[in-house]
Length: 347
Ligand code: SAH
Figure 1 (tube, rainbow, N blue to C red):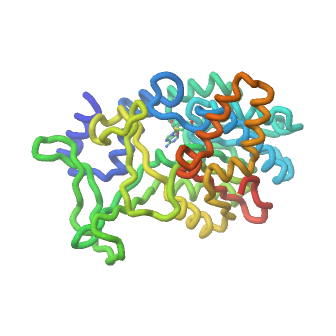
Figure 2: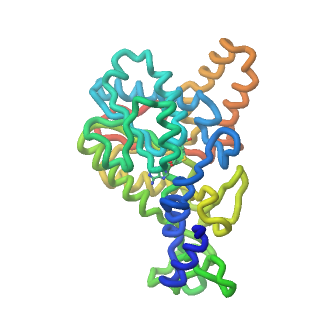
């Protein structure tokens, strides 16, 4: 039975599901979910290309960022934790770049938090020395540097739509032809707001739990979390749920489990939750500003000088990472830190 049929039956028996439940099924269903069966990032046939897949400079600079922050922590024994490492390219580049930092790798315990079995296999090819965990909670205690690129956007969202008579939750149900279709709940008993009719608000419960977990870890022992993703700082009241297959946007209801489903990250909410929890918050800044702060332009120049035959490719990669019409502006970087640490590099 396909996931689509399964969801159909589920809705017929139990009524419409929230967008978050739908996303979780599409991404994480153990038999048919996108990440369980066919995650395609990077390489031929990819559904989407992430920054570390676009350029080695991205992972290298994050590796040097980690080295800088390990020094800021006074070089303790520490956990380097990556959430959602994809094919392991970022970590491989980060480890290569930080190899020569005296004592760092000896002090480091590496944990990759990954739920996808095929991606764990890919990661093991590139970073055989890692240990794996299913959730951040399962990483060992102690000082931690946590990094995550394009992880938060996978966490399921609920959506609320402003109608004539108030707010409604967006739901996935069945239409007259028994096909999956978006619909709305009855109006919620929520106060009126200034939002226009048709405005959409998104809430990400799993993201909120993750922030609480980061907070617990960074209060138990010193450390930082560097979170990079596409997202917004001021919500525009728009629907950001998107399904990507072979680099093209497709209908999220079309083929559940076959496309990557994501939503933009609400960085103002992340910052607010972290601040309320007593963490220090730096950013969000744009990816361009962060990478320039870490010297991406000098890195590109140095690589081009050493490999003149690759100069054009490196210029393209630099543009890809930093140009506002590419990843430079939509992608944001935020750093959450234990209290009383010096400011992190890049902000
Ligand atoms: N960071 C990588 C991959 C981004 S894709 C890169 O930049 O290329 C998202 C990654 O998060 C994948 O590795 C996916 O399997 C993992 N992932 C998504 N949701 C997850 C969850 N709830 N728990 C653990 N890993 C998850």
